[in-house]
Image 1 (cartoon, rainbow, N blue to C red):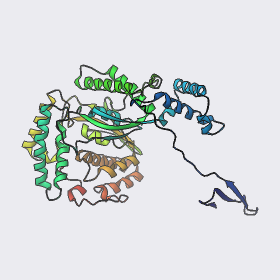
Image 2: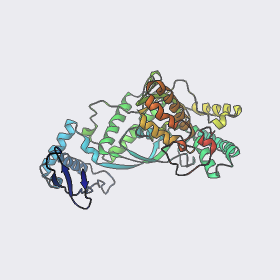
Image 3: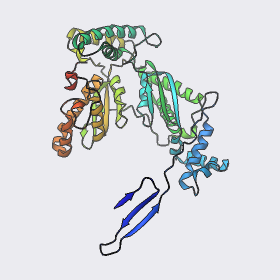
Image 4: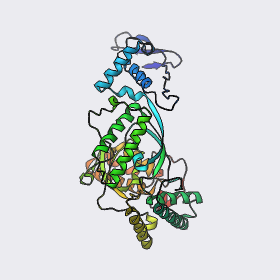
Length: 427
């Protein structure tokens, strides 16, 4: 048996090699766990990053793995010793120590698609302005035609939602849903703002990946050309802030931005303990899906353009035609609307897909991603029926409706919305 006394620093083990042998009691003295916050302020008075100071701290941290004494002794070591270690780690590719330095950036006027590029890379935290909760206004650099379509469909959506669900939704909820759908007409290059936090190493990685994209992108293609230009402007800003170091941007493994895939439509779906699935969705849906950071996503633009039509509009043929007509008008202005369909490849583990279901199979989730998550769930379940009976029995528990029907999920606030719980809502 094992005993632990949390008021003391000893563990007592009772050991016996055989029932016929004596019992021995051994006391092992353990020191209390202690945690200190390391210096993490690397901002100069002029607002630029103190790269030298950050590199020195990382260099000291790199010495811990083979230190004969404590980390406090390394903090006081000769500066030349630290500098040699910095040079060694930077040149031999052992860059993980530079992940200890986190930096938070407030980024203004970043195109939505470039924010999505950043949000597809791992090891980050982001908070971004949402068009679900904030309307298009004169402060945003958006064309007159986009604004006209946005406000036209904002009013139509409010009327349609109010007529069908006015007894269920509040006026604020109706407005929020109308804004969420009207944004479909706005360019995916619409400027937004975000607070983006990542590590010193990762921001250098990202800039090296963007550098690659800038070189190989087709500047004659409107989408790629605009995105490459935006990446170039972003890299200049990071350079001004003194967060880039050529040695951290080496990219010896020739990695590229993870968001962009090719021939995704030719890839087969697979469902097991791991899964991969390809489907069509809008940029808006992909941006929502990226919040599931345990899953991986890639996208590819479609040669034949198509657009998502909200079911509440699609149920009215005349309005559906008008929606598509307005979408094509915006598209013909050399604009890529957020509501344009793209090919999306999603992959991850079964457990993390179920976590996605616990987030997206809900009446409060964006409708498009709710519908696709439900579709993927049913495909997953059907594939497991023959290939993996154990997982099949498990996934059936999540196939009866919204997440509030799951046996291992407790809803914090009952929506009391029947169509939402049965996943047949129109908005």
